Structures are given as C-alpha cells and as structure tokens.
Length: 195
Image: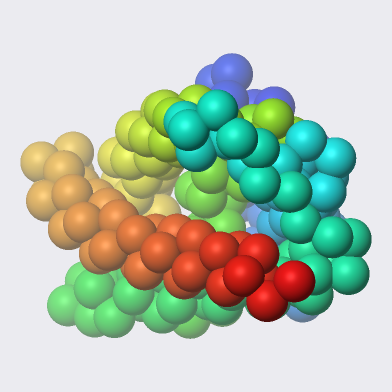
C-alpha cells in the first residue's frame, strides 16, 4: 500500500522502487490487490444501496442490500480475475524479450499499473453514469501513462520499444476493461430486474 501515493505523485521513481523489491505474488495480493480491488466494490455497494444509479432519466435506481451484496461479490471476483488476466497478457507479450519476467512479476506489475482504476472506483459512491464514465476514462489515461513509464524499467527496453509495448498492452487492457465493465453493468442491471 505504500506505493499508491508514489504511483500518483512520482511514478518513475516508484516503479524503480517496485522493481527492486522483488515482491511475491501472494504477499502482493494480500497487501495491495485485495484491498485496492475492494474500493470500487464497496463504493458501488454503498452508492447503489443508499443513493441509487442515476442514468440521466431523473429517476434513481436503488438496489436492495442483499442484491447489491451478491453483485458486489461477483464484481470483486471479476476485478481480481481482470488483474490476473492482464498479468498473463504482459507475460505473453514479453515472450520475445531477453529479460522476460515471470508470470508472478507480470501480475504484480499489472496490479500496480491498475492502481488508478482501483482508486477511480471512489466515484461509485455517487453513481452518476456520466461522472463514472469520465473518471474511469481519466483513470484509464493515467494507467496508460504508468504503463509507458514502467515498461522500460520492467523489461529493460528503450523508450521507443516501450511505446509500442505499452500501446499494445493498453489496447488489450482496454478490451479487457470494456468486457469487465459490460459484464458489471449487465450484472448490476440484472440484479435490479430480479428484485
């Protein structure tokens, strides 16, 4: 958790510190991923049960605590799965580099890069559709910047090669993000129609 502020304030220096730590995946998940992934889940739970979604029609759509709780668990598992998938994607894309890191290191790196997306989940406390989309887009841009800054250090490659690698990774990550977002919207909408 000590890296969260550094990734936002001085990402280059923080990425160097992260690389030198050689953190295990289990330690990292317990101390970073499980906590950070809970931010959007808890905020969405609170926002949907207390205020409700405002989809622009002027009508607030509120979910019951039971429905929202079940959907929150599924949402949490989807986020954890998304981080694991992106770790595998980075490992697969680094297959031709001589300094190819392990899947474990790629998963740690992917979860640190996803930190702005986790933090952007705070906006779900007030679940206004356009505001969530705007904040999510800004978080995605900063995630791309973290990729661009972190990939040269992580793979020991130059900036030009890093731009291609991070652009490709971001494109795949965007696809994964859109699938997860669509799945989340369907699940929350399905939960609303059930109860």
